[in-house]
Amino acid sequence: MLAPMSTLDLGVLISGRGTNLQSILDAVSAGELDARVRLVASNRPGAAGLERARRAGVPTEVVPSRGFADRQAFDAALARVLQDAGARWIVLAGFMRILSGTFLAAFPHRVLNIHPALCPAFPGVDAQAQALAHGVRVTGCTVHLVDEGVDTGPILAQALVPVLQGDSRESLAARLLVREHELLVTVLRWIAQDRLRLEPPAAPGGRARVLLRGVFPVLGLDPSWREVPAGGRAGLSHGPTGRDRV
Ligand code: GRF
Image (cartoon, rainbow, N blue to C red; front, side, top):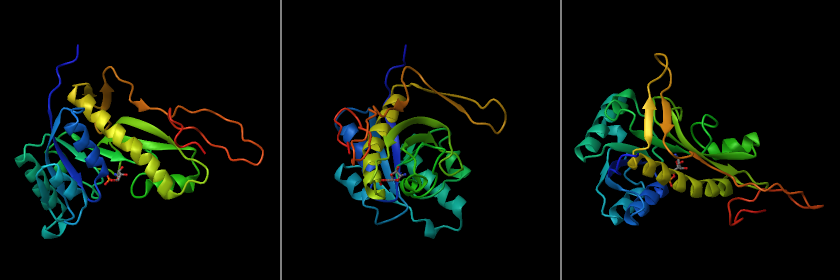
């Protein structure tokens, strides 16, 4: 038996436009995710996502990194505003800073990140361009727990996205973003449903093992292999609508 749903108290960190934040806000207001966004915080005063939070009636806070003596002081201040707002789980939704152990210790194993690649591939900035440069046929997105590395923490779930011939960075990023929104909300729902368990690392310094009860944590491709018509281009259908067929 699963434990009853418990309302997630979320803090969301952003640095930019905030479409992943929007997917959380939409899911909460549609009753599809049992969560309260307690605070949206940004290191950048001009982050467009802050306006999305205000429109949804969610408190916002700007914590510019410049005002602090060092990284630890910034991370401690950021953790404090989130704790004071009542956040218990933290989502990095396009937050462009690496958080230190000082921040992570305030929310142990409760900080999530969404990355637009199949981790551990293509960490860091512009994962979409990295995927195109490598010529991979499939990329995707990952929701993982955050550790002190760059997109390296224990993986919770992944979604697959095909790279189509003729894709630009922009077209690939747009196709990824649709799946990111779906994956992020799905994983948060699983956490609210108390499906997430972590097993401590087998050896000191190892990775915690992630167990998700009763769900299959891969959002698939639904591929249909096709022959290339003479003079035509090959591609994969994507999802039941075939929206991205080439
Ligand atoms: C997303 O691609 C996310 O995976 C990455 O940063 C981007 C943020 O986009 N970490 P948005 O601000 O949520 O629109």
